[in-house]
Image 1: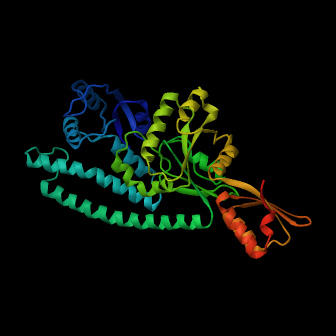
Image 2: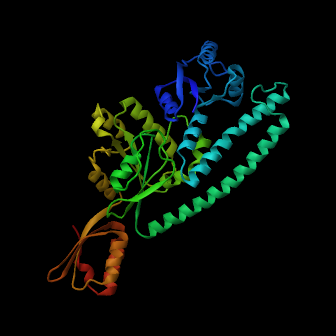
Image 3: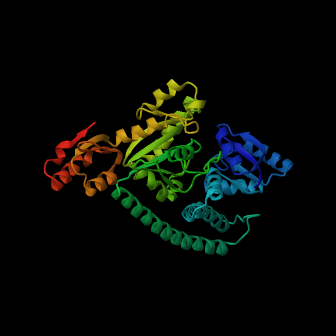
Length: 405
């Protein structure tokens, strides 16, 4: 990675830069003064240029979403590459991508990011401003632009095929009676740790931002619940970048339950900001119910204040995924929201079709043989009428032995 100068607005941006492996030679707080031509003020520009020359920096990274003209003017001024926040996030995504789909989504986002920059280069060439170290003539850039358009079309087709395959998997899982739960939230809020804690699967946990790009789905123990973790959110992600990862986020949008995971170790102000940002990204696309989850309880201060903040969207479940605290309560909350209830059935003869029905939509907790066969099980309440009907079909009057516990 590069030796960089960073112009930042908040400390989180420095963490993003470091998470990619860049060596920060010098960082400068940008303040509120803005120069429309360069985004940075004249004073900050001079300070960065001076430090870049003295420290032999290889790149400048700016905590902003730069216009293509601002990017061009900064690169000409510093005479070294300039990245903005979007480019940094795309580079982090590229570093984390492991699955074929994640790699395609990252490549699509990178190409989409390049298009306005190429337009700016063509504009500068036509207006007589010749790009310096960037090189390349107008026709060469125009050819590259068309190549990008063709490549993006191919990637879109491939991603759409994968989206349809994922949609078919969701339908099969629903048909098999599974409750689909998605974990959403700000990056580094402990989503992957929560997935590992609930499923018991050996999920790789990394203490770095955006460690998860691909969807990961696991079953919660013996429960009829499938839980999926996906990409985390971050501030100032432009709509087109979110849209590039929309096929992955559809696992959240189409879930029965969304666990909105929040970092309890954050200050109340930061927790509220991240919660609101996550809700803005989720928007009205979520079809299921949102359960707010305050994670990292073992590191939380001013907990009651944070609980009151989160209660604006619902009663939070308090957990520590790392320590295993509150997980049983979380599973029970999922069941409650899905109206899963416990029932008992007393029947003289237990037909295999009845067992199959219960196991398809619920979970058998206990079978005992007394004067009659006793079955204790959990199942969504909306399946009760169908079970009554099945019992009456198999043997008239058997449904009288079915009761809620």
